[in-house]
Image (cartoon, one colour):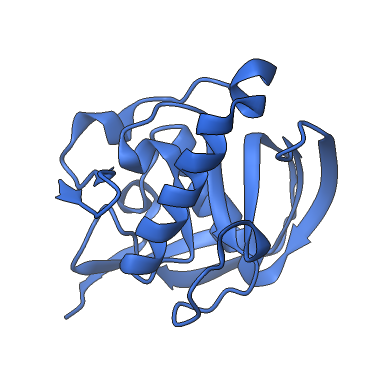
Length: 169
């Protein structure tokens, strides 16, 4: 467990919460001001560790949402809601047949990267911060990041899907 200055704890394996399935958020939870504050704190934590995505379960909150940087650049610091997308109660509706293998890291599994096969294009459905239903296609690197974070909401880690694992420094 790693604590940041906003008192969020980054959960590290083998923390059992990382293996639990998240529960959907209600409309009242989405519209609560504390929810926006929580997202801001997640964004700060993600930046502290130079991440590009972070699931609520990774900070011990078993709710079905995650954030992803709009510009998938580890070096660029997020400016809260202008620079991140929030995916609430996400679902993947379709996976393309075309699969790509990439080396992925995970803030909750420091020190390793895993070679993980992912669909290059997915059709997703989720709620945005105003609780509007969004349905769209996502492709390429953003689709990979979405699938990685989506797996977290289901208690699945990259080590579960890895074809190869390597240590990183």
